[in-house]
Length: 100
Image (tube, rainbow, N blue to C red; front, side):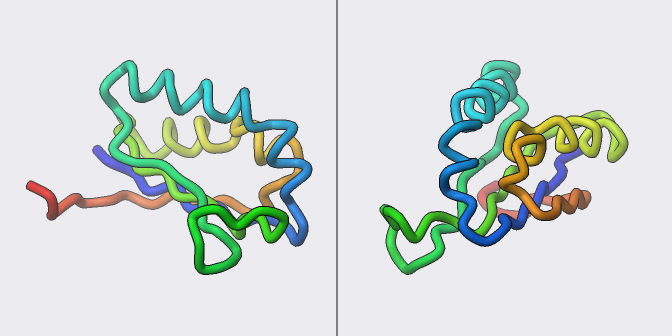
């Protein structure tokens, strides 16, 4: 089943994000190589794809996991969460309707 992993950043998270980014990206690449990643990306703090020093307010990952518990365990080990960049992470079942 698919799960949406919605993460919210702390204020001024950019420095913590930058330090943890290589490990964060590696985990996403692993999901992609396994054919389980639907999409992933950050929420820019301002209305542009390149927010610079404004940074980001959170992230969204949609990926396939066997159970909600497995998805939650994966999310709890995110380097952004471990570094303190994320204030909170919510994991929810997700039903993809489009694209088909």
